[in-house]
Image (cartoon, rainbow over all chains, first blue to last red; front, side):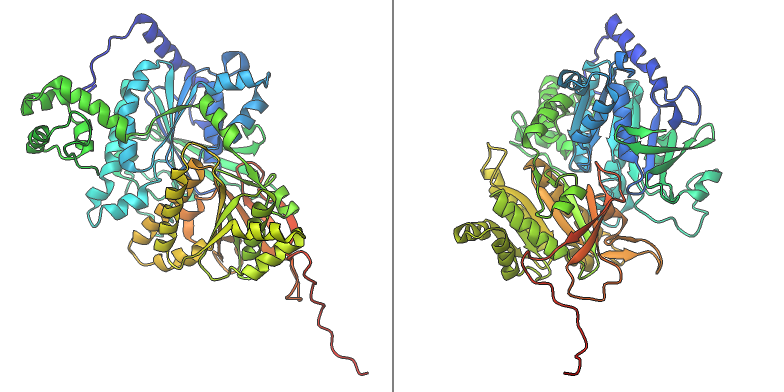
Amino acid sequence: MGDAPRRAESGTQLLARLEGRSSLKNLEPYLFAEEGSPVHGDIIEFHGAEGTGKTEMLYHLIARCIVPKSGGGLEVEVMFIDTDYHFDMLRLVTILENRLAQRTEEMIKQCLGRLFLVNCNSSTQLLLTLYSLENLFCAHPSLCVLLLDSISAFYWIDRSNGGESLTLQEMNLKKCASFLEKLVRQHHLVLFATTQTLMQKSANSAEGFFPLKLPHETDTDYRPYLCKSWQQMVTHRIFFSKQCSSGNSNGFTVISCHLKRNQVVKRSFSVAECGVRF
Amino acid sequence: MVVLRAGLCPGLTEEMIQLLRANGIRTVVDFVSSDLEDVAQKCSLSYKALVAVRRVLLAQFSAFPANGADLYEELKSSTAILPTGNPSLDQLLDSGLYTGEVTELMGAPGSGKTQVCLGIAASVSLSLKQHVLFLDSTGGFIASRLYQMLQAQTEDEEEQLEALQRIQVARVFDVYEVLSALQELRDRLSQQVMSSTGPLKIVVIDSVSAVIYPLLGGRQSEGLAIMMQLSRELKTLAREFSLAVVVTNQVTRDSSTGPLKPALGRSWSFVPSTRVLLESKEASWDKGTTRRVAALAKSPRQPTGLQVELDIGNGDMPEPSPVTPTQGL
C-alpha cells in the first residue's frame, strides 16, 4: 500500500467487498468470451475507431452497475475517469429512464448517487488523481468498477512533450498503467479502459508485439501504440467496429478476446434509446 | 511536470526541498509516488510532515471527483439548447446546439458552412440576446450578409444594431492566434466568476481545418499535439463555462468512391460530439441555389443517418433565376 497508513478492514467491510466482487459475473455476459467474466483483477480494453459504440457500451455498463437490485441491476458503485470530456450525463439519464420501472427523479438521483466522475486534463493530472483516489477506494468498499475513457487521450501531447526519447514520451502513461494495476489488484476492482484507433494498421503484418498472432487480429484494425506495460496488463481486449450492412446504420460488432486463455468470440449489438442491446 | 519549490504549498520549506532534491525527488510526481517512510528515514524529515505535504499537494494538483447526482443537478440548470435559426437543422440536432459540447459542420467548399455559421450567430444574438464569439480564419465572415439576415428577421433597426454589437468577430489566421483568442475568452469569462450564465453562450470557429492543416503531415507529431491541445481547450471551455462550440471542417475521401469523412484525420474525429455533413442537393446545375442537404454523421442522442433539407438563404434574398438562353425577339 506504499505510504498510506495501513487500514484495518472491519468484517462488514470485507464482506461488502467480497459480495460486490462476486456479483460482477452478471455485468454483461455477452461482452466476454468465457462465462464467469469479469472477475476482480480483470483489466478490459475497449478498442475501436470513432463512432463504433465504445462510449455507449460504457453507459450500458454504468447503468447495469448503478441500477438497484430491485430494478435488475447490480447496485454497485462506479468510478468514471473522463480524460476527454466525452461523458454525456443527459444521455446516461435517458438510458436510465428507459431502463427503470419507476422513472422518478428520486430514483434517478439515487442511482446517480452511486456514480463518481472525475475529469483529467493531462497525463500528469491523471497520475496524481489516481493517487488521490486511493483513499476513495478504501472508504467505499462497494466501489469495485473503474471506467477510464480514454487512456489514449494524451498520446500525442505526451509524445510531443517527450521529445526524441521514447522513454520520456511513455513515462507518464507507464506510471499510470502500473499504478492502475496496483489499484486494481489491491482493491479488487475491475477496470474497463477505452483506447482509440489513432493509427492505421501497417501493411506489414508481422508487428511482433504479440508472441502469438491471434487469428482475429487480421480482421480488426488494431495497431498497438500504447506503452508495453499497458499492453501487458490487459486481460481482455474487445474490438469494436461498425457493421456496414445496408440500411442498418445502427449495427455494431464486438470481437472479444480473452488474452490469457486465447478465446475469441464475435457478437453484435445495436444502440437504441435505452442504450446498448445485444 | 511541476517542480517542487518552496512555498508551493504550506509546509514545504526550502530546507525540505534541498533534502528531497539530494535524494532524487524533484517534482510533485516524484514526491507523491515515493514511499514516505523511506524518504523520512533517508532525508531525516518528519514522517507526519511529509504525509501532510503529500495530502496538500494531491489536493492541489489532482482532479476532484464529483458525485453523479450533484453533477446532474448542476447540468440541469446550466445546460441550454441554442436554436440555429434554421428549424430543419434544429430538428436534426434534437432541438438545437447543446451547450457543453463541440458540434462540427463539415462540407466541401461552397456547401454553405459559413452561411450556416452566420445564421447561427444571427439567431443566437437576436432571439436569445446572447453574445457570440466568431473566430474567422478564412476571411469568409461578411458583415453585410449577417446584416441582411438580421434585417430579414426583424424590422426594428435598434434591435438589429444591438444584435450586431453582441457578435464579436476576431480574424485569426494561425492556430496560435486561435489559442490566444480562446485564452482571452477564458480570462474574460473567469472574471465574471460566480454566475454560471455569463452573457456569452457560443463560440463559432470557421474554419478549424484552415488553421490546423498547415501543421499536419510529415513525421513530427508536434502538429498533432497542437491540434489535440486546441481540442482540449475547446472542450474544456465548453464544459466549464457551459458554452456551445461550433467548428467547421473540410471533407476528404479514402478513395475516389469512398464515403465522405471529416478532414484532419482520425485523432480529430474523436473530438466533436455531434457532426453534420452539409452537401448540395444532387444535380443542381443552378449554382446560385440555396438548397442544401444536412445529414447527421455523429450524435450522442440521435441515430446517425438522419437527413433534412435546408434552405440557407438570407431570408428575403431573391433566388437568382435559372439562366435561359436569349430568345430572338
